[in-house]
Length: 239
Image (cartoon, rainbow, N blue to C red; front, side):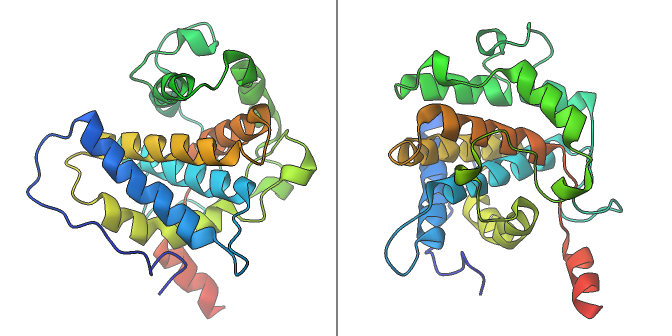
């Protein structure tokens, strides 16, 4: 049983098209899973770890929905980068000037942005998307960042988790919780809803600009990173 195996799984009924209220319910299952799984023996949760885990889960759902590189089994080296126009379009939409306001509501970050604004996050607190993209493109393939993402937040807020590892370890439990949703796109939306809930939690202990930048950098970076697979993990364990 893994880190997330003790949480009760939601029961699934007959599959049908999901509305946002139903998707939000499954998002709540994910955010509860993250908080429960990361609560230490003192009853505390490190907000930077919660944001990192949930952003990584959301990134994996994006990879799975796009289907350009299989999430669960592929020939790429886990942690290597996958630069893709299709993923850029999935994350940011096919148009816009690089600002948050220009993102289509149906894009990954466009949806997240509008949901966060509804929860009293301020536009001024969101990171400059063009700077996020530029920094990732310039540094992502450097050896120190294999399996993680290059962060530009203050080092005191760096997570204690490896996104590549924790994405793999949580994947089966995430699959189980989201199984009743009818489409992979609905599962992305549920993960983004959960990320919104985790960010609401995290701003109690982190300044909003810091937790937002962490979420954006991890979600963007891990969506462009080849995932760890069971086959690769088994190979590593045998060495």
